[in-house]
Length: 358
Ligand SMILES: Nc1ncnc2c1ncn2[C@@H]1O[C@H](COP(=O)(O)OP(=O)(O)O)[C@@H](O)[C@H]1O
Ligand SMILES: [Mg+2]
Image 1: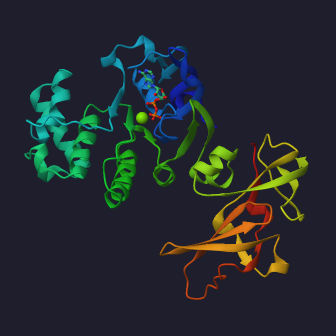
Image 2: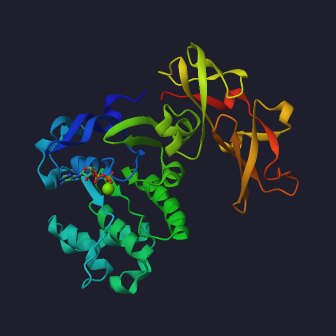
Image 3: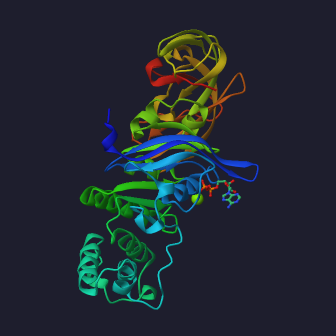
């Protein structure tokens, strides 16, 4: 467990009201020093509101935000050890790259020689040294984004807030910039708080992720913890894809439970804390289910559709109880794909399934 002086940002029971609407509802989070921390959730869940509160742009309605031991509310804007990269990373179009990055440093009162030195350092960090004299209009979207990043890194903030900084870039570029961002975080040791609605982005970059829904934190953990052990239906469904089987939970013990699957077979499997007995949901990831002979399956159904994804193939199976299951298979030369209309059995390791809190 981290000690108090390892905490960069301590968010304590923060609520933010806009009139009668609560955009944040009692959010508590500890973000560690030197961590790549991601706030992940659908559009409108309160991510930008929380970032703005951390930056001190937005007053919270109740609760507190402590940055390295100091309440953000007590700090003047220029005393806050925070900087932000926005989704719309508006560069000054009439200034070249160097001038764009230097602007903030001069405004902070740095002399020109010191500022110029620092600009050189951060342009090297974001691999734009060769573009120092270019105008923004002569740069690609990805390069412009890196100028915005350099500009935010230049004053050496302790915490860098990144609000969906990659959303304007196309997929290939986004994937490349993800790795660069992670590297820059490691090299600088600056605490990154990264906001995204893209689960893949969150999974690939973050030390830890907070999954947020409608102004509330649903779960905090590493990518693996959140993917492998989602707490509830929202998290299981939002992070990756999952099958949610309607089951009847008969027994619960610490961390495990028994349930009856559609069709009547009983299994014992891991259970989320807070799962309750009676009707509930079992999450099984598509890659953890296999198609087998009808008589060998834990559940039975009919193949209804194939979806070709290149590296993988999805087979959709409809169950007798009206539910659907997606099975993900690797597109190897050996796979045997059931015909549409064929009755099939479905099998999985009970330990790779999970009873959820509804
Ligand atoms: N200034 C504002 N006045 C009223 N409602 C707002 C304001 N800013 C944000 N909201 C509302 O708060 C909710 C969260 O917004 P936001 O933090 O921007 O979400 P996200 O960044 O996760 O998409 C949304 O429902 C949004 O409409
Ligand atoms: Mg937003």
